[in-house]
Length: 211
Image (tube, rainbow, N blue to C red; front, side, top):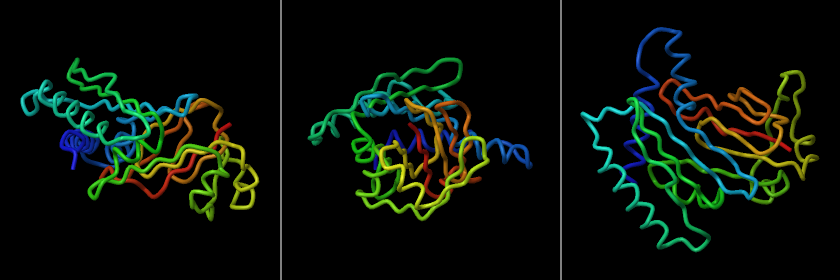
């Protein structure tokens, strides 16, 4: 299990769940996702940025950075389809920001999924997602919340792009978002927020279709 990823995850969840009461619970459900952003670039590469409250009394920034760099180097030595890079690791104003770039969603999945974590990510066309074994026995809603589509309509959008995630985050894509699945709120033309449970865990699988 990758040590620094576990620490970052625990920092994110504990920060999101700080406080009590109904309003704080709602904020926590959004916050657990809002601390992580997944951006899909035009070339299919993925940039993940994690921003969290950071207590230097408990964690040493330099040590965490060294652990992450070592983990990335170790992963890259065994990678055949491209290397990942740590673009940013900095602490400022009580927050830690880490930005990692992956050459593809497949590499993102390979790095972030192990017996303890499930952060599988798919980015491609609807047709490619079907070929990869994803089921579309689901309902998706347009960005205005006025139209709902099902399996037949989704499969008819074979050339449209789709992002499928197993872990909650904010997401930013290169095109215009058309439809989203359950537990996702659209926050801009090309941005959305995947809601999490009270414990910071995923609320099922997340779907975003865009063009």
